[in-house]
Image (tube, rainbow, N blue to C red):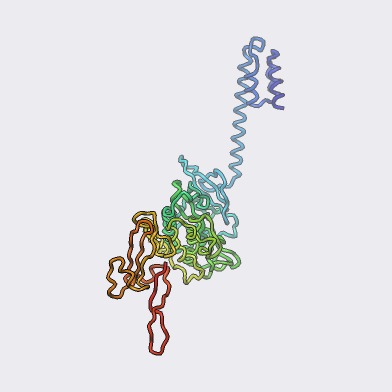
Length: 439
């Protein structure tokens, strides 16, 4: 239809017609007038003034269309909900209790973006209030910063900073070493410990609620929609409601239970987050030592063994046997990072011990006082006196390491197994009184 109007207009002008009325009645758009101006054979037959006249029609039509578009945009803007000074740019993935949008500050000339969260269900206002209260009392470099909020408007909203790196669950951590991932996790622990000190229990810690700044390495905790305020006097969650993500939820919070909410609940979730950061997957309950999920079974490097010291303390079903504070977990993670940085060995006989000298071979046990002191003479040692220990030698270069287990902390080495040394009691049975280290 548009092309027919253009063809008729071109034929009309090429025919030497000089009246503008019939041309106006054709209802050409600005783009169609532009096509006509380019296609007509302007010359004496068309009148020297007709091109200028059609050019004027084109510019007039273009101005009318621009004004119409502007009015339409203004009408749409007037009909759209207003959220203070915040202008919606686009919609983001919705959360559990709020719709989220990327917004800009209409009063600012800067290009910085923010996140607007608008409450979905007015019946959840009290919980939304808790989220705003919980988030606004926090000021930590690894917690999403609250910029603005309005809980009195018809559609209550909250505005926070926007993290360009996206959510942690969308990040590719496979390019990072175990040590680099532990450093990120240590920052998360620092934030959660701070949150707890401020009387807030997050209750929904998971990779989707942890975000990354633009560098892709700095984590920040967000989405306090299910947070529990320890200074509150009312429970916002009904007994039949589940609290938190299934795979990351502490056992004591299952089935909507909230009588035992405390720092230990977030600590359990942190253990699941740590496992996800190492493996890129997660499981239900405490399965990190099961064959299918045990990362130490296929590990070529020993770094992951140090991570398991943290997992073993956090992923415990009984909350009373679990680590009781995030500070405790953070200290274990700090020790793990220090040991990895120093290239420390795992004190476990089931783990291959790479030689410190050649780096090619592995240490093997070649002497042990549990077998008697005679075998240590081969290494120039005087077995006089009572001492316990063992000697390791590299199978490749022969480098030797000696350990006095009687001087070290009991239980430091994993792999102890009872070995009987016979002591005869008068009229009594033999008893075991010595512990042997076995490779």
